[in-house]
Length: 189
Image (cartoon, rainbow, N blue to C red; front, side, top):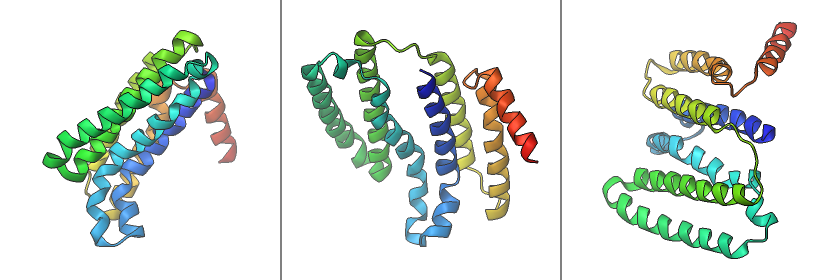
């Protein structure tokens, strides 16, 4: 549970950095043909994390429930095709990104729920969900910021540094861990 919590903290930080700074990264690393694709990063980064987070919930594998695992994979395939079929005609590549995120979230939730039946892991879902929603909202707002390249970077770095306070307030980072981080930062400066 602690490893999963630390993973969530790092994943939320990486999600913020990659999504909020996507326009700046693409401006530096690519040509103008790719600038518009920055808007899909906010969907694809969490989809990538969700698609692999089942490793923290090994219950179905430990219980050797391979038939259940197979059915989850079939649900994954059907849902993916269905959502892409519905969303791509109306929303293009954005629809494909949203479909990917929805499918990854649904499949993760199914795998996690099944796993918890066979091998329970005491996860603080409230802290994780509240932190994820707050970081998602902040990141969405930061993708809309357009104050110019350098001001964007300064603002986004400042907001990103505030995420640790949010993690503390939502109890995603425990008090003793937060104090240790603060002490480490103070000793370096």
